[in-house]
Length: 92
Image (cartoon, rainbow, N blue to C red):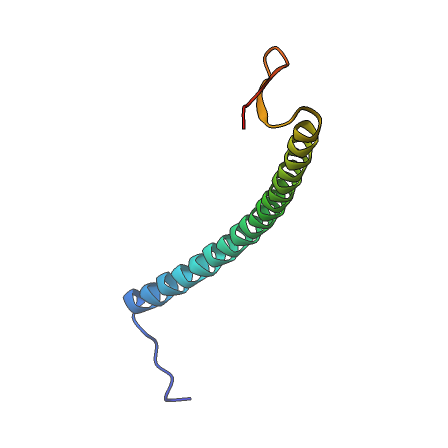
């Protein structure tokens, strides 16, 4: 056991400080990972909402097409004033 040597207090302090910095970094990385998981969840929810709204938009466009076709079949081509419900036929 003659080979055992004690390092200086300054060196020991530096080693402990470095170890403390590593522990702090590990803690921060863990917290960052938790934040990322929450962000990933929020992004997934956002993407799902966006997908549903786009599907609804396409559905509304199809309903609009169907309604326009129905009005044209009933009244012919023209312009509809949605404020007062009047239809003005166009001369072809």
